[in-house]
Amino acid sequence: MAMVLWLALGLLLGGCGAAALEENVGLGGVTPEAVVESFLEDINAALADPALNETATRQMWANRLASYFAPGERADQRQAMREMLDGFASANTRPARGSRAEVTISYDRTRVLRADERTALVEIVNAVMTVRWRDNEGNLLLERSGALLRLIGREESGLPVIRVDGRWYLTEAG
Image (cartoon, rainbow, N blue to C red; front, side, top):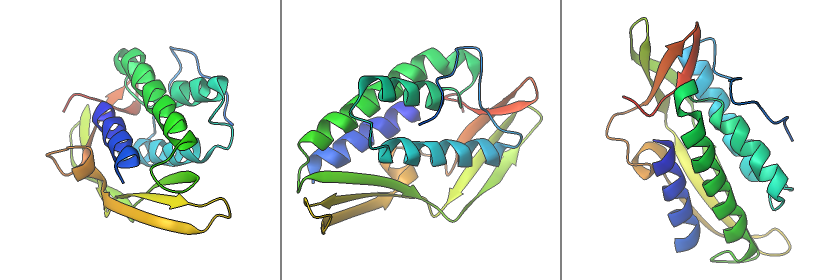
């Protein structure tokens, strides 16, 4: 799921500070909805960070974003997040239009579609990824939006989460 999100973000862009976390520490969430909402909030914060062109800042965000995933998936997710952030920062030095691009993910709410003791599927209601290209003065030149789950290639209508040691985490499984 996350790898596809970052690939979609890279294609969308090209075509038209928090503390670093240790490997064994995970943000997760107390509910399935909470982990999805916090993850999306941090993606938006990472992509809007004015220091994202700095290597250390991208690594810090990659660590933080990966910590929302199940412990066994974090190493792969850390790499995927780092590649996504590197690609975004690089693309923003020479955007398809104007002088910079902004990416935001917006949605109305989240809700659990199905759940058991260990897994859940969380719908992101009306989730949209928007890219805005701006000129040097901040004027909007072009805006493109698309349904988030369609852009990331999810066939199901939600994101899978898993419970580990009483906390909920995003997962590739599902």
